[in-house]
Length: 98
Image (cartoon, rainbow, N blue to C red; front, side, top):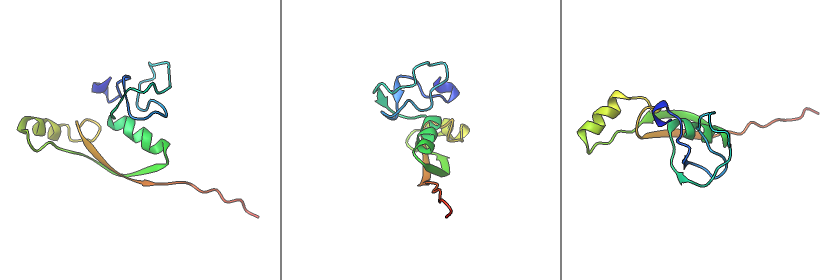
């Protein structure tokens, strides 16, 4: 699943619900596993909590040449081993006209 960008089922990022998992899994409840996130899962988590993603970039490991090279080849946040996201809290307000 991880190679396809999906969150592995036994690694969760929230106790609210399991973000980023494939539809293959029938249970849509968080169990309380280790908290870590794929890019897909973290995007879903942010959107679900009323954040708008402004920018997302891969983050490279400077200490290891080979890993840094792999990260540069996979230079999208979704394929990178690490990423950073700039997001802003967004809440649509509905006004009732009088």
